[in-house]
Image 1 (cartoon, rainbow, N blue to C red):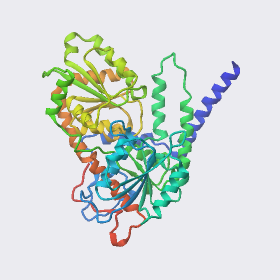
Image 2: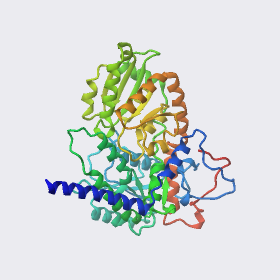
Image 3: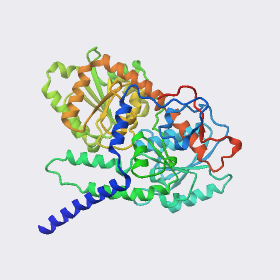
Image 4: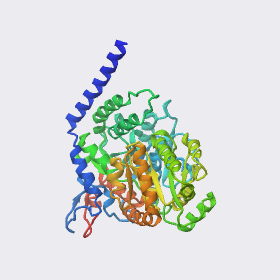
Amino acid sequence: MEKDQSATVFSFRSFCCILVIVSSVSSISFFYWSQYYYSTRSPSFSLPLYDQDTLINLLTYTSAWNHLTFSSDPPKKLLKIALFVKKWPQRNLAGGLERHALTLHLALAKRGHELHIFTTTTTNSSLNDTNTNMNFHLSKPTSGGYLDQALVWNQFQIQNSTGKPFDVIHTESVGLMHTRAKNVNNLAVSWHGIAYETIHSDIIQEMVRSPEEQRSHTLTERSIKVVDEMKFFPRYSHHVATSDHCGDVLRRIYMIPDGRVHVILNGVDEQVFKPNPVKGKAFRHKVGIPESETTLVLGMAGRLVKDKGHPIMFEALSQIFSEQDDAFRKRVYVIVAGDGPWGARYKELGSNLLVLGPLKQSELATFYNAIDVFVNPTLRAQGLDHTLLEATMSGKPVMATRFASITGSVIVGPEMGYTFSPTVSSLKDALLNVIGDGRKILEKKGEVARQRALKLFTATKMATAYERLFLCISNSSSSEDGDYCKYKPPPHISG
């Protein structure tokens, strides 16, 4: 017994010591981020105005590149790009990182760039549904499902010596490990979640843990991982943060120089995700939702698992429905696109909660048009969730957990959505506020959300920003091509 207590005390002390070390060596600026957070929530927030003749150094530009305007026309200089990604996505079952890889590199290929994708062997039929500029180099994964680094590096070297060498190398997360990436100047890594962000998630998971569940040691392990990441991240030459908050953490906590950290927010296909009330109405009819001016439809999408917040969402909905009368239950519907353990639990709440299972991309686009508000109760404080962007592109207001990545980049003010703390009581209050506001107010919020999404979250915005970064860091850039690292703003740019 004494030994167990001693081990517990040692573990706790170790965790505290590691947090102190991380805090001291990186000067964690909670005050700074709170100031930034509240300033960006303001509807009047905008980027600084630049003189028309001012040249901006893109490499040291700290705001999201999505705020800038790059040409929609393909550049004169076309690139040979190497991409390392653990798994190439299936269109209908893609996670956030995979969806980003598909959307971005398909757009780059359509703009004329030559893509070489180093990924694991798959039976994925979507390999055939790509572009003639996309070349796949498949290899057997390791026992852990990762890329075999020696094998893919050999494949890369063969292609690098065939024809012209690669202009730029892109790795989605640690698809290419830091041991291979070090000293490669024309390389950029995109981060879709880092250990420091995940500590917030771990704290929340501990807070919502039931008394019957055993206490996890994840917090201690995660803080050690933060220190590990701080040591090996600098081996990557350029870092792309997919949210404003992640960019701030990479600079201030991980201490990566400004000129090597670039914020490019995720984007979604604007030709797929767009308002279409007619299809939305037909979708409601198809799934059995009666058409009425008072009917309100809440939507959720994604994996129906614990860390996506479904336990607290289930409890909040259960309390609301049990406390309201029959008239309320007849006018409020919840439709869920996705699968997972909590799908069966949701069906217990009654006939006005519909679990549809996973949907194809075209069906998902119609799903967004059928709802009045999109709800994301995630407990994972990392990355920038594509479902939020898809919903706003479809003209719907969004409601999500109050994480810095979300409030710093997507729901920057109440005029476009709702936020809540990851507790049952806070989520319940937010749901009741949404229902109380009604369709008219939700429609207005959806219009504001779509206008912001069109400025920041389109696949074209994302692709042209990455394209410019790749041109800037390309090995073959020359003075004859112009300085791609300089940007001349049009008059009156604003966010």
